[in-house]
Image 1: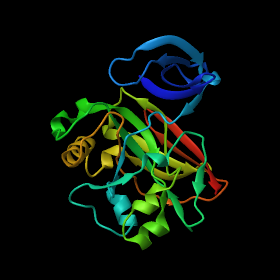
Image 2 (image 1 turned 135 degrees about the vertical axis):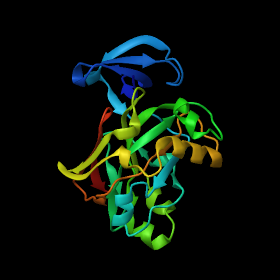
Image 3 (image 1 turned 120 degrees about the vertical axis):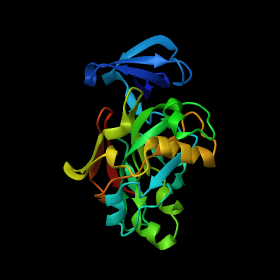
Image 4 (image 1 turned 30 degrees about the vertical axis):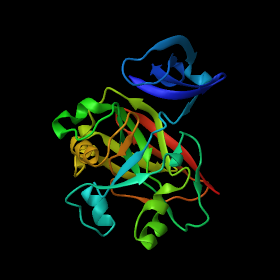
Length: 256
Protein backbone atom coordinates (compact mmCIF):
# COMPACT_ATOMS: atom_id res chain seq x y z
CA UNK A 1 0.00 0.00 0.00
CA UNK A 2 1.13 3.54 -0.78
CA UNK A 3 0.12 5.91 2.02
CA UNK A 4 0.17 9.63 1.30
CA UNK A 5 -0.96 13.01 2.51
CA UNK A 6 -2.82 15.02 -0.08
CA UNK A 7 -4.01 18.59 -0.47
CA UNK A 8 -7.44 18.88 -2.07
CA UNK A 9 -10.24 21.41 -2.35
CA UNK A 10 -11.45 20.77 1.21
CA UNK A 11 -8.09 20.66 2.97
CA UNK A 12 -5.47 18.00 3.69
CA UNK A 13 -6.12 14.28 4.21
CA UNK A 14 -4.31 10.99 4.52
CA UNK A 15 -4.96 8.72 1.56
CA UNK A 16 -4.07 5.48 -0.16
CA UNK A 17 -2.78 5.72 -3.73
CA UNK A 18 -3.98 2.95 -6.03
CA UNK A 19 -2.70 2.64 -9.59
CA UNK A 20 0.01 4.51 -11.45
CA UNK A 21 0.66 8.04 -12.68
CA UNK A 22 -2.24 10.43 -13.35
CA UNK A 23 -4.68 7.52 -13.69
CA UNK A 24 -4.17 6.56 -10.03
CA UNK A 25 -7.11 6.65 -7.66
CA UNK A 26 -6.69 8.49 -4.35
CA UNK A 27 -8.78 7.02 -1.52
CA UNK A 28 -9.21 9.18 1.58
CA UNK A 29 -8.28 7.68 4.95
CA UNK A 30 -9.97 8.94 8.11
CA UNK A 31 -7.88 10.21 11.02
CA UNK A 32 -4.42 8.62 10.60
CA UNK A 33 -2.58 6.00 8.50
CA UNK A 34 -1.50 3.69 11.35
CA UNK A 35 -3.07 0.28 11.78
CA UNK A 36 -5.84 -0.88 9.45
CA UNK A 37 -6.93 2.09 7.27
CA UNK A 38 -10.43 3.44 7.81
CA UNK A 39 -11.57 4.70 4.40
CA UNK A 40 -14.13 7.53 4.26
CA UNK A 41 -15.46 6.64 0.82
CA UNK A 42 -14.21 9.85 -0.78
CA UNK A 43 -11.84 9.50 -3.73
CA UNK A 44 -10.14 11.65 -6.33
CA UNK A 45 -8.08 11.29 -9.46
CA UNK A 46 -4.36 11.78 -8.83
CA UNK A 47 -4.37 14.79 -11.15
CA UNK A 48 -6.95 16.53 -8.92
CA UNK A 49 -4.85 16.51 -5.71
CA UNK A 50 -1.36 17.59 -4.66
CA UNK A 51 1.03 15.42 -2.68
CA UNK A 52 2.42 16.92 0.51
CA UNK A 53 4.93 15.39 2.94
CA UNK A 54 3.46 11.93 3.71
CA UNK A 55 3.78 12.39 7.47
CA UNK A 56 4.56 15.20 9.90
CA UNK A 57 7.00 13.27 12.09
CA UNK A 58 7.18 13.91 15.84
CA UNK A 59 10.94 13.64 15.36
CA UNK A 60 13.45 12.92 12.61
CA UNK A 61 16.47 10.83 13.60
CA UNK A 62 19.22 10.60 11.02
CA UNK A 63 22.29 8.39 10.76
CA UNK A 64 25.70 9.65 9.71
CA UNK A 65 28.46 7.80 7.85
CA UNK A 66 26.38 4.67 7.31
CA UNK A 67 27.85 3.90 3.87
CA UNK A 68 31.57 3.15 3.94
CA UNK A 69 32.22 4.90 0.63
CA UNK A 70 30.55 8.09 1.87
CA UNK A 71 32.59 7.99 5.07
CA UNK A 72 35.71 7.66 2.93
CA UNK A 73 34.80 10.58 0.66
CA UNK A 74 34.30 12.76 3.75
CA UNK A 75 37.71 11.73 5.07
CA UNK A 76 36.46 9.79 8.08
CA UNK A 77 36.11 6.26 9.36
CA UNK A 78 32.93 4.23 9.70
CA UNK A 79 31.77 4.44 13.34
CA UNK A 80 31.55 1.24 15.38
CA UNK A 81 28.04 2.20 16.51
CA UNK A 82 25.42 4.16 14.57
CA UNK A 83 26.15 7.87 14.63
CA UNK A 84 22.79 9.52 15.17
CA UNK A 85 21.66 13.13 15.07
CA UNK A 86 18.29 14.86 14.78
CA UNK A 87 16.59 17.21 12.38
CA UNK A 88 13.63 19.33 13.54
CA UNK A 89 10.16 18.59 12.22
CA UNK A 90 10.11 22.16 10.87
CA UNK A 91 12.75 21.12 8.31
CA UNK A 92 10.27 18.75 6.60
CA UNK A 93 9.41 19.73 3.03
CA UNK A 94 6.80 18.39 0.61
CA UNK A 95 7.57 16.97 -2.84
CA UNK A 96 8.01 19.58 -5.58
CA UNK A 97 8.38 22.43 -3.08
CA UNK A 98 11.59 24.48 -3.17
CA UNK A 99 14.65 23.85 -1.03
CA UNK A 100 15.70 27.34 0.07
CA UNK A 101 19.39 28.10 0.32
CA UNK A 102 20.14 30.16 3.45
CA UNK A 103 22.31 33.24 2.81
CA UNK A 104 24.46 32.28 5.82
CA UNK A 105 25.82 29.21 4.01
CA UNK A 106 28.18 29.13 1.04
CA UNK A 107 27.65 25.41 0.35
CA UNK A 108 24.46 23.39 0.69
CA UNK A 109 24.61 19.70 -0.27
CA UNK A 110 22.04 17.07 -1.23
CA UNK A 111 22.04 13.69 0.55
CA UNK A 112 19.58 11.16 -0.86
CA UNK A 113 18.40 8.54 1.64
CA UNK A 114 15.95 5.75 2.37
CA UNK A 115 13.78 6.67 5.35
CA UNK A 116 11.99 4.35 7.79
CA UNK A 117 8.58 5.32 9.19
CA UNK A 118 7.81 3.92 12.64
CA UNK A 119 4.29 2.57 13.07
CA UNK A 120 3.79 2.15 16.83
CA UNK A 121 5.21 3.35 20.15
CA UNK A 122 8.30 1.32 20.98
CA UNK A 123 11.19 1.33 23.44
CA UNK A 124 14.13 -1.08 23.63
CA UNK A 125 12.97 -3.24 20.73
CA UNK A 126 15.47 -5.99 19.78
CA UNK A 127 16.68 -6.05 16.19
CA UNK A 128 14.94 -9.39 15.62
CA UNK A 129 11.56 -7.75 16.27
CA UNK A 130 12.29 -4.36 14.73
CA UNK A 131 10.63 -5.00 11.32
CA UNK A 132 7.27 -5.44 13.09
CA UNK A 133 7.29 -1.82 14.32
CA UNK A 134 7.84 -0.34 10.83
CA UNK A 135 4.83 1.22 9.08
CA UNK A 136 6.69 1.63 5.82
CA UNK A 137 9.43 3.39 3.90
CA UNK A 138 9.76 6.68 2.08
CA UNK A 139 12.46 8.84 0.48
CA UNK A 140 14.27 11.71 2.18
CA UNK A 141 16.89 14.26 1.24
CA UNK A 142 19.07 15.18 4.22
CA UNK A 143 19.98 18.63 2.93
CA UNK A 144 23.07 19.94 4.72
CA UNK A 145 24.91 23.26 4.99
CA UNK A 146 28.28 21.58 4.57
CA UNK A 147 30.43 24.57 5.45
CA UNK A 148 28.57 25.05 8.74
CA UNK A 149 28.75 21.34 9.54
CA UNK A 150 32.53 21.58 9.30
CA UNK A 151 32.96 24.90 11.09
CA UNK A 152 30.51 24.35 13.97
CA UNK A 153 32.04 21.11 15.23
CA UNK A 154 28.55 19.64 15.55
CA UNK A 155 25.71 19.24 13.08
CA UNK A 156 22.60 20.88 14.47
CA UNK A 157 22.63 24.19 12.60
CA UNK A 158 23.80 22.64 9.33
CA UNK A 159 20.97 20.09 9.28
CA UNK A 160 18.10 22.14 10.68
CA UNK A 161 17.13 24.95 8.32
CA UNK A 162 13.53 25.09 7.15
CA UNK A 163 13.14 23.04 3.91
CA UNK A 164 16.24 20.90 4.71
CA UNK A 165 14.31 17.62 4.95
CA UNK A 166 12.30 16.97 1.77
CA UNK A 167 10.41 13.68 1.99
CA UNK A 168 7.92 11.70 -0.06
CA UNK A 169 6.23 11.15 -2.35
CA UNK A 170 4.43 8.58 -0.16
CA UNK A 171 5.04 5.75 2.32
CA UNK A 172 5.35 2.29 0.79
CA UNK A 173 4.20 -0.32 3.32
CA UNK A 174 5.00 -3.47 1.32
CA UNK A 175 8.74 -3.32 0.72
CA UNK A 176 11.87 -5.29 1.50
CA UNK A 177 14.47 -2.55 2.19
CA UNK A 178 17.53 -4.80 2.28
CA UNK A 179 18.77 -4.30 -1.30
CA UNK A 180 17.23 -1.32 -3.06
CA UNK A 181 18.87 0.96 -5.58
CA UNK A 182 19.06 4.59 -4.41
CA UNK A 183 19.94 7.23 -6.98
CA UNK A 184 20.22 11.02 -6.77
CA UNK A 185 20.26 13.30 -9.80
CA UNK A 186 20.78 17.04 -10.12
CA UNK A 187 19.29 18.50 -13.30
CA UNK A 188 19.16 14.94 -14.64
CA UNK A 189 22.84 14.14 -14.01
CA UNK A 190 23.41 11.11 -11.78
CA UNK A 191 25.32 12.09 -8.63
CA UNK A 192 24.64 9.16 -6.26
CA UNK A 193 24.03 5.57 -7.27
CA UNK A 194 24.23 2.81 -4.64
CA UNK A 195 22.26 0.03 -3.01
CA UNK A 196 20.90 -0.22 0.51
CA UNK A 197 22.68 -3.57 0.85
CA UNK A 198 25.80 -1.44 1.40
CA UNK A 199 24.43 0.06 4.62
CA UNK A 200 26.99 -0.51 7.38
CA UNK A 201 24.40 -0.67 10.16
CA UNK A 202 21.30 -2.42 8.83
CA UNK A 203 17.79 -1.13 9.40
CA UNK A 204 16.77 -3.55 12.22
CA UNK A 205 19.98 -2.67 14.06
CA UNK A 206 19.33 1.04 13.61
CA UNK A 207 15.83 0.72 15.06
CA UNK A 208 17.13 -1.30 18.00
CA UNK A 209 19.93 1.20 18.65
CA UNK A 210 17.72 4.30 18.45
CA UNK A 211 14.90 2.76 20.52
CA UNK A 212 17.42 2.01 23.28
CA UNK A 213 18.12 5.75 23.44
CA UNK A 214 14.63 7.22 23.06
CA UNK A 215 11.03 6.11 22.78
CA UNK A 216 9.93 5.97 19.16
CA UNK A 217 6.42 7.15 18.31
CA UNK A 218 4.13 6.51 15.35
CA UNK A 219 5.31 8.70 12.51
CA UNK A 220 8.87 9.08 13.73
CA UNK A 221 11.36 8.90 10.86
CA UNK A 222 14.78 7.29 10.79
CA UNK A 223 16.94 8.45 7.87
CA UNK A 224 19.28 5.55 7.23
CA UNK A 225 22.29 7.40 5.77
CA UNK A 226 23.47 8.66 2.41
CA UNK A 227 25.79 6.93 -0.08
CA UNK A 228 28.85 8.43 -1.71
CA UNK A 229 28.53 11.22 -4.26
CA UNK A 230 27.19 14.07 -2.13
CA UNK A 231 27.68 17.51 -3.60
CA UNK A 232 26.46 21.10 -3.74
CA UNK A 233 23.16 22.53 -4.88
CA UNK A 234 22.70 25.86 -6.61
CA UNK A 235 19.74 28.16 -7.08
CA UNK A 236 17.69 27.18 -10.12
CA UNK A 237 18.69 23.52 -10.04
CA UNK A 238 16.39 20.53 -9.46
CA UNK A 239 17.32 17.54 -7.30
CA UNK A 240 15.61 14.14 -7.46
CA UNK A 241 16.07 11.05 -5.30
CA UNK A 242 14.76 7.72 -6.60
CA UNK A 243 14.47 4.52 -4.55
CA UNK A 244 13.43 1.15 -5.99
CA UNK A 245 9.90 0.18 -5.06
CA UNK A 246 8.94 3.64 -3.80
CA UNK A 247 9.31 6.25 -6.54
CA UNK A 248 10.99 9.61 -6.96
CA UNK A 249 11.19 12.67 -4.71
CA UNK A 250 11.86 15.87 -6.65
CA UNK A 251 12.48 19.39 -5.38
CA UNK A 252 13.62 22.62 -7.07
CA UNK A 253 16.29 24.75 -5.39
CA UNK A 254 15.94 28.46 -4.70
CA UNK A 255 18.10 31.15 -3.19
CA UNK A 256 16.32 32.57 -0.16
